[in-house]
Length: 412
Image 1 (cartoon, rainbow, N blue to C red):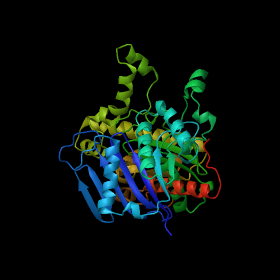
Image 2: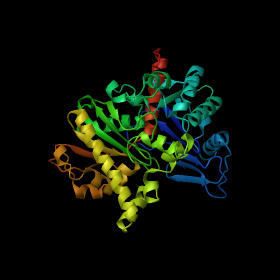
Image 3: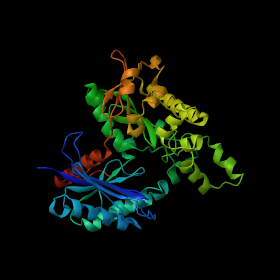
Image 4: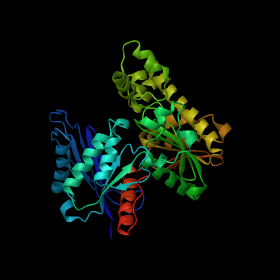
């Protein structure tokens, strides 16, 4: 008997979803998936609603003024193209929630208290948590009898050692305003680290790895025995690596300097999140376009690629030292999986750490699981596609099973 979970990832301008069997093995295709994009925008006649069942794609144009209309488009897609949700017995609806703060260390069944707690965390993730909350509210309304489960991006990093999550800032900042390192991409790290251990042929508890989640948003994590001991993103998802439109690490003196020049907090927040990173350096946020421009002799693109990959090298080296040993470097996310030049620039010449990249294998690896280190490399370099939706489905199903068995899911 299958365990069906509808996974919902509600953003401010898009709604992604997948219908999955939570008990299916890694690599299994979803029963259905889709995307509603350009929510609140006038997209004209361009197709903005996409629904896929098996090999059949069903795109259409349907203006969605708000989250409610986007969720209605999701329901319409299932009603028109299947599977019919009314005929299915859903185990749960699993929701991606970006920020769980210090309270949420595990996925939780959603009730009114959980909703209130997530709303209290909005100041920590003002661009993400409100949209996540709206998705939960809409799903609770439509699927009134189905358990709703919140799965938090920050939960995987909840137990970071104090030395890793503590900023050297005034106590009032830390205690009254929650200023600390939280970390993100947790569902991706949970899935990828477990799969990497399987590929290494070792129990997860016996592994030490640096995992690089590289997409338009990017982060690094040092994972020892399946637990995060450090990660590059901090209070919010801007710190750390150079990303498509986010700056990554930045001198804390910068906002004060800019404020004295007339650039206020809101403009600063917007600029480091949406106008920085590769976009600021190369005029392009897509790594594929930056790589192509650099190959064509564009000096700005070459600099952007150099800054991005140099930052990656520094984090790999720092995290290898933090771990004390290194079994693997694992790359995932759209860039990690499909950009050999980024992997090469970041990891070539790191034999001092036991990393020996096989350039031919690396060049051939543009999708799927691959080993891209030499056979004799002390450190295995792996490319492992992430599957955050499947991880959310599994965690959601596990929470429901625990609840059915009379166990209370952890909330702190």
